[in-house]
Image (cartoon, rainbow, N blue to C red; front, top):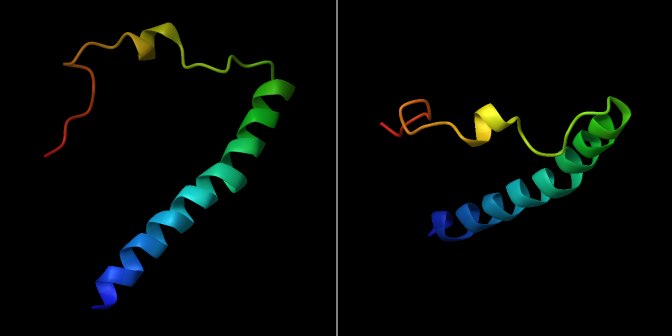
Length: 55
């Protein structure tokens, strides 16, 4: 019974943490350091052999 409440609560907290505590400072640092918003082309166009796989 506890899993029914804890799992959704944890998921919502993880989303909010990412949205409000990780993303804004990341965007500010990228602006200050003049870094691109998107990953490098080599990372975006990685082939399936280069991407991590789930085990």
